[in-house]
Image 1 (cartoon, rainbow over the protein chains, first blue to last red):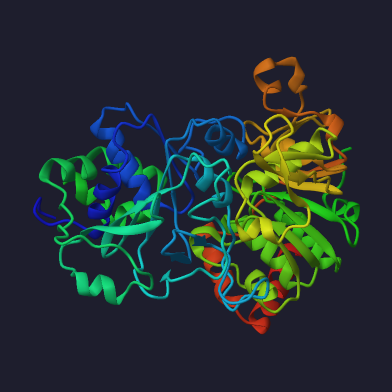
Image 2 (spheres, rainbow over the protein chains, first blue to last red; image 1 turned 90 degrees about the vertical axis):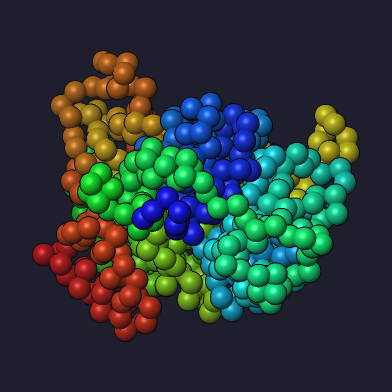
Length: 250
Length: 270
């Protein structure tokens, strides 16, 4: 792989890393290899100043109080950013991890809400991600609110969504307006494609830039120290994105 | 306290409320789960702490549900982790064959820790405005008594009948070494009883060594423990992800699930 070409995952991770500048501590949930890559990229760029805790693997986080520790830390404001996805995400940034149609006998049933109904409220920068940008996933209104994008006045809510990254584009989330605004479109995709595949209404400025491709220095960090760490945490993902370990050292 | 492996499941009767850990470490009591299925247990209530969304923990819950052992479940999530969705869980919920109580991870930890302390409830932020909260009778939005105008959610404590898990080791006095997997401690403290399999038994007392004692579930919480090497992967001969993927493929249909289970149960009984 030359320095000019890059995998889509490397682009998404670079976008994510750009949202984590200056944070003391970033946590990454289960089954989130691309957010993990982005968080580790931030950490490598600032020479370890950002602490990164990655769930789902005993090697991923230096914690000692079981699964509750993430939530305890978040409740005390010790986690600056976290990542959430959803089977459905709507234009008000509500997320649905439970299922479609009625409840509890859903048409499609997903695994469950996990920590979203808490972390979305207390982590200052929650970054939403969904690698299938379609009208099936990005809907006008979710069928079940695992965690709401907005809260009524008076509800304790220091945290919430700041962005949504998909395989087509990046949105910013404006908490004041309660709406997504298109921030950039990934190389090879168009505004029409984004509109055609988004089920909710969003704001667009006159000239939407293309998402910046990772530069040579970024790719070197991704394929060097970040890839090495990812091999211990997400070996299948690392082999797929960064190539097999042997090929890499050749 | 030390029991024969085949006697553990007898401690868990029909309609028991059982609490199971998340399976990130190899703590899923798969050997006991097989015995519960073999004994034809019915109307179990499962509480996951806080989810069973790793391949083996998700498969264990899926097997209990598919075998008709489960009436209800409280969970933040059930899946086979990176392998994919849990087919019997998914179908049973969609068809209304089990009652599901959807939770969020920190609410389950809060409820279990309140239960461990013998308190009736605790409070938690978040949740307000979610459908998770809206569907729960045992979550109540109350006003913070110390800061009026600050709504918080009161979460009822959970005290399951029995905690069931696999742990790395026990000493000769029935103290269980859990390392930093503190979820096992909270599960046992909240439950009325704890039924445990261990990978190893050491002829020592962990309290003679502070470094070991720091990672111990004291024997005071332990009802029955048995030495079952590989008890968290009974019937899984090779790579876990490949085995669970094959299970998932089979378990998508009732016939495939029945055939997989009869094969697994006859194999582990042999």
